Amino acid sequence: MARILPQTKSAAVNPLKSSQPLGAAFAFLGVDGAMPLFHGSQGCTSFALVLFVRHFKETIPLQTTAMDEVATILGAADHLEEAILNLKNRTKPKLIGVCTTALVETRGEDCASDIANIKLKHTQELAGTEVVLANTPDFDGAIEEGWAKAVTAMIKGITGSGERARQPKKIAILPGCNLTVADIEHMRDMVESFGLKPVILPDISGSLDGTVPDRWVATTYGGTSVEDIRELGTAMQCIAIGEHMRRPAKALHGLTGVPYVLFQSLTGLQDTDRFVSLLSAISGAAVPARVRRRRAQLQDAMLDGHFHFGGKKIAIAAEPDQLFQLATFFAGLGSEIAAAVTTTDRSKILEKVPAVSVQIGDLGDLESLAVGADLLVTHSHGRQASERLRIPLMRIGFPVFDRLGSQHKLAILYQGTRDMIFEVASIFQANQHAPTPEALDPLRNREISR
Image (tube, rainbow, N blue to C red):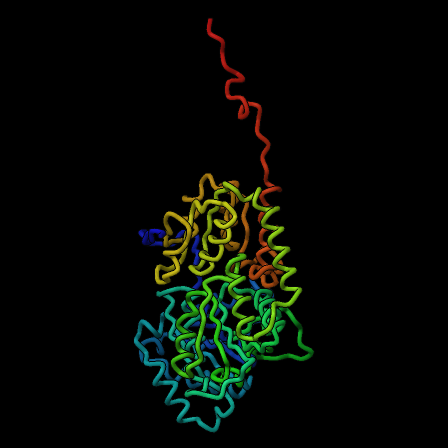
């Protein structure tokens, strides 16, 4: 069991984490026809927007209530009402996802009551648009909590309650925020190969996959439909991926009775075998031949790659679930987790990270702990530490802004695990340092005493 070391610094040095509101907006972006709305100042929204655009290289629909000094002192209910009505009239979204920021949370705004009053007052004007609130203060938690809160809010606010007639081939999938566009697309293909119908919430593979519409669309285009969210209760089974998705899975179970199974990771042979076995049990179908072939390819990649992984020291900085995903991947191939840094101590998954300790901190902590490591694993903000330490960097997570195609990088199931083995092994091969004669023979230049 890893020891969790609390943060001791009063300031972040090269910050690692992204905020809760950004995580909530990220989840809302996985719904078709959605418009995330930051309830706070313009600066909070601008910062999140820059990170999204730099990572995805796409136009991101994101709006703000633009609170000013007066609203901060006297209350921002009017700003929220005006913003919701303006968005409804101008962009006609199917979903407005309100993400609170530190400004309104610190002031103690009762946003739930404000939104309830707005819905009651403007029932006709808001017809056809769902308004969902996620309470996500910047000063608490990180991107995983924000994502999970938004998914939970959508389930509680939109999904029909009560026991429903179940569709035997329909399964609800709640992916964690560490899954990429490619991960979700590949997972859908895997599920459909068993003859099952997956409903994925949120589905960023349909809205942030880099497609260009034939006309201007002010909201998200693609992703989970609001109607699919409303009918989640008809699923036969729910699959949650990542410890932070336990809360929305429990919410769905409590609301509709749909049973859930939680996978803490889908990277690696053992976890993927469990996932495939579950799909086979739900569908009653044998594992398709192409899936078996992918498994054989992964086995061969593990055999080829473990020579490069054995004994290597890895330093990782990531959100808790992604930290667990990556650490178990490297440890399973014989590497040592020399440094593990994460954003928050709220997740129970941290105790299962295969490392001596997990530091709650930032990339400054990673840099100090990673001395002597063979590989750094984090997002693009770790590039300076990589240069200073002269240790190669594997870019993964959010944001990755100095490389193209990060959203199409596959890291789960048989094929994704295989691809990661090849990527890491190639990094090690490209950064080999031939031993010097002095290193091979430390007595080479010894002085002979007379």
